[in-house]
Length: 312
Image 1: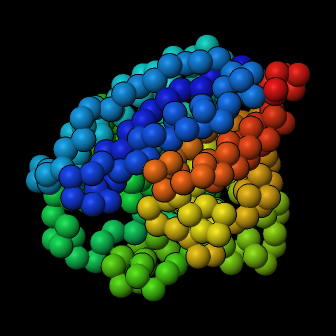
Image 2: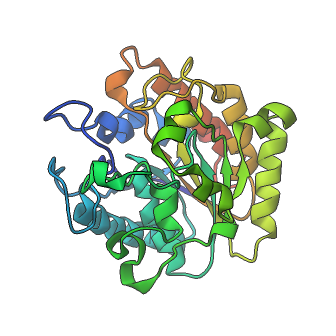
């Protein structure tokens, strides 16, 4: 059975303006407002609230809200673990990308698992000049690096379980490189990693369905007990998903994303999904959120956990 769990953490993003918290904390409420719970025929698994958002730097971890992120990850991991242990398929509504630490920590406690990472950015490459953002690195922008063990132990080695997922057990789909990325990040680190990459160029050449099948094949062939799906809404093109902090100039259409998610979600080895980065404050008419909800519902309707009669 599908269980919808709210994890409305915005701790992994910088303030969009002075004194204002990132609006991704409203993602879960927005998708629930579009009927995701009833349309999935899902169990309401409640919510795991984050600690208060702090605007100042954290010098100890180097990450904005670092201690709060670690605390939330542990509590989210416990709740996701409870759902997994009772045979549920968790749909975790974020939140920034940093919430993926919780589900991956939950799985790491249970063995070796994989990760399908759908994102318009790599979320792995380190800053060329970290001193420029000392104490203000963002877990949202480095989430894949963190779950694969790169970063401060407070975030990457909770309970001595580093890494939460091995690089070779990750399939990253939809990434692209913008000129600003080349300037700010050491992209060679991602290129040299063992992460299996299916960038936007691969999607354009082979098609979204073929790219998703290749990613799924990689994860199903890995020596793991299943895999988690991470969805960052900025994998979508900015023409259809402008309501993110870093709109994507060369992303997927909703139709392509639906194909990708469906192919991944129907795998018997898919264990759950988190949805992140959509910001309702940037979606004035609510249409982007409605389409995102439609996409997730359509993709998950192919699973055996859902009774299609409950969609409406």
